[in-house]
Length: 155
Length: 440
Image 1 (spheres, rainbow over the protein chains, first blue to last red):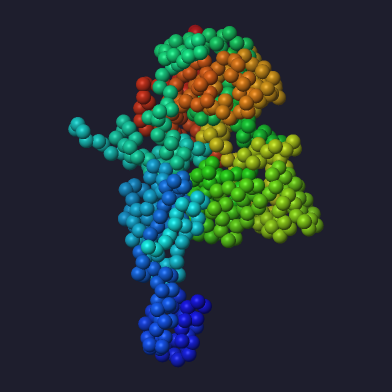
Image 2 (spheres, chains in turn purple, red):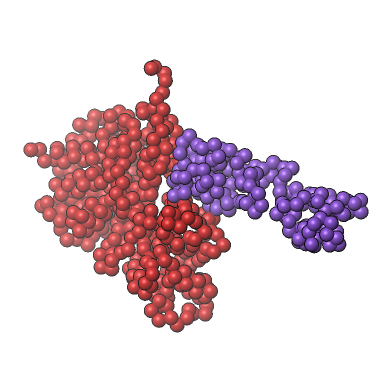
């Protein structure tokens, strides 16, 4: 709804979608870009265009860099992040039954517990960077950490 | 080749807590452990204890108030002297040693007409004692991983006491159902908002019960299971009606439910037997529902607490508080607590535990007033008051042994490195004491 506010709301169908609302929904899921809406590029919508770009930028994080912070003071190495991470589950079979992954770590493996503390290994395979659509909004590790030691943000 | 380390990547079992994780990867050269991967903070500390500054490295004897380093023979002789002088010795601990050492401990108690007790008496022993008349449904960890759809943490803060438990039981994906967290519902019943609440999802139920009122909740649930007549409008024990309804629906409809009971239930302050009522509730639900079952898992802290229960039960049919006289078991209703409060003992042998800091001041004082022999591997509050200290090696790291996991599954522990100063294991120490007491 936030995005819809800043669209022209004329339902001109120039973008190929039936309504501006449909366009807003697709915009949210990352299926279309802001530049796909021709009227927005006109000078009278310039302010709206800039606001939208800011909003989308913060939601998609295309311009900012993803960072996952693990606070080692809070972490007690329970390994929940290792087990819940969908990328780990795909590439490290032992994590399916709650076990520690093999060593040396697989190249896709994101988290690893070493010396009682959680470590971030390869951020480039994180779902927030690699996946498309709804999977891109993955926040499993942050949600399920019992100590709130993991923080996802964009800098 | 000199200077080149042979790298070892080995999956070992961890003795940090009663979960006995079998997936810890240890890297080292066979002489020292360099890295521990996969272990939680508790497990890592256990592995670091080998070279920790808290480690007891040589036998010590207290002489005129000061601890002095002596040879093992002298220390053993001194402990034999203490044991021979006493007529009512007390043996306590045995929950952080292997089952073999526990057997030897019982043998020692037999030969000195002693009273032997394990930490289980103030922990999960209550459940096993009650289970003798009620029956008990237990579940194993792999069963929980693969089948369970409802987990109830009752008076237990698993996220802090057994850090990897939630990881294993709640977030793992089972073999028979390919989804994990999605089908598992978690219910936490606790008066305090503990760290375990951090893993709650949308479908989960958190019940902030009033302290000491678990019994009311159990009784209401029992009533409702027998004759559904609706819950009281203003709720029970601080839990409102809607939550009670949801709780009842969850526990009666779950296909495979497990109740994890922690210290909140095991050492509750009420005079009534909460454990008895809880087992009764579980029994009732199991009779009522046909398609599934509900089981119980006790969350003990020490890694081999279940072991002593199993050893003593298999030998004498009693899981703790064994009094021996003339090589026979004597019927007694006393426990370590009653013995200490009455001061009905004249020397104590503590094995692998720290009662001085665990027990209340009055009981610790009683323990301190009599000669104390300590068999342990780390310095503790008990270390500071002991008269004779016999160092032992770390089971599971420096010597082999058998231990029972919290779900009563025996796990064989391994030897990874050699102990420093040629320290011998608990088992050998106890058998040396026995052989010196009864020379052939």
